[in-house]
Length: 134
Image (tube, rainbow, N blue to C red; front, side, top):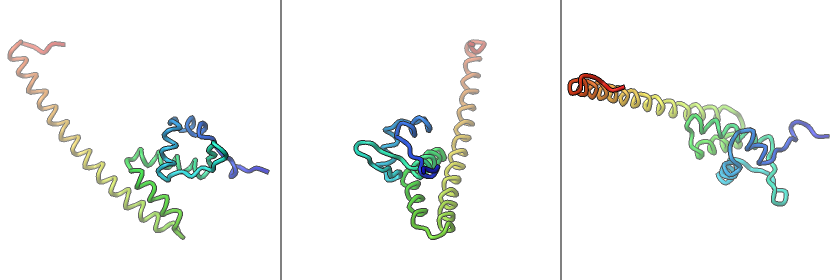
């Protein structure tokens, strides 16, 4: 009798579900993030692989590297409890949050500078032509 836990997935099913290419899934496999079973030439992905793929895509979305994601998976696989994994994850997220805040500050500074330059250009153009073309 098959259970939900036993459900397996093909590379095509995962690619469609997560709107990525089979090539991307094979790349994550090459990086050690997924470990599908082989049946002849076919890859059979477990629920664990599906969850890891979902977590990999979420990690990438928040800016984690594949190396950082792999380290988190390895930590989870070897941890006897979740505490050490959570501490590492908190440290990693704090670093990423700090990086994103710095990028946000940098973007705001650039936007301010761009806006200032645009206003200067508009003023120069207005002096020369009497108006800004639409």
